[in-house]
Length: 294
Length: 121
Image (cartoon, rainbow over all chains, first blue to last red; front, side, top):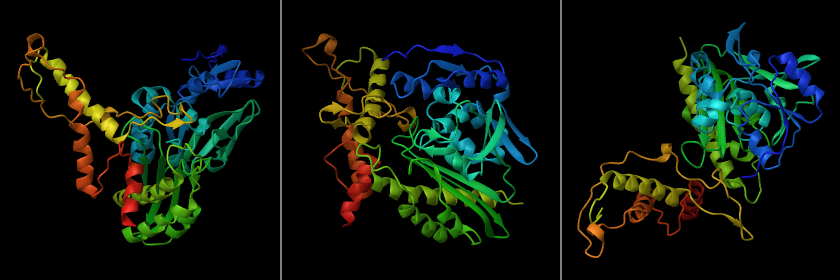
């Protein structure tokens, strides 16, 4: 195994200190769980002279509900999300997705912020957060700014952070009564697996009619993406299995999977499976929404 | 399984369980992929082997002790022979479920999807 090239390791104790260090060094990189970053440092995909550890920064690790929103700190670990009662009760798809990230060891180290910043097209927490309508809070020495998660990803392994900036929180509106979500993942085995494709759906039902619908797929485009054309065909309709089946078929032409020769799955297979996973995610969402009504 | 003489029954049990997991791997997942002679999946991220989630409960292993006269204590090898029955069991189960009989392994989900598509045509 190749050694990790030499670097200076910093352990700031609070956010202000971390932001200062990140902007101070031109070649700094923040590290939390390191489950992706260490591999990339080892194989040379990324280089750094200064690693800024966020693990001592206590004010980045939390899950809370405040003024109608659920807030999750960037260094909250997948295990914490998967075991949070609040997330399980209010946004169960995020719970399910966090529980399917990698292995136990990875979930105990990996963080939601790291999963998003790493910006893998198949990041498991990205699709549920996209359909929950999440926003990313990005901080720098100049202060925080907020971007919708839809604008956060700019390409495979690329995000919208500029030098000196740090993702500090993701938040989304608390899902109301009559809402429900579904998450589906297809890997090459049942556990500890990378998504060949994943899909998430979120719907709100009011007096039998679909009031809001958001759907997203992962590993089917350069970034995890929402699919507005599917969403618009669901809104205002009375949802049933036939409609969901028909609408999900549209994914085949709407997704844009990688055409790389040695991709983990072929383009055609990803297109076909995006329809299947979308259908299952939507059916799960419909089931949950019905159960979630008074 | 005919083990000749069970010198360490618990170890044999472990070997049989391991063989089932390995058999699942080679029939459904494991393949070395080459690009101009170089292995491109030279890590366990892309050379996929079964996880505990892919392994079913294994019923009791049945040991048959028919001594082999040319070995010490009559014992027979147990490590690899236990895999032999697993692969045809899985490929035949796939044939039974889908009508597709494969003489190629591994039968990954994508491979099976494409094969079933070809059968439809």
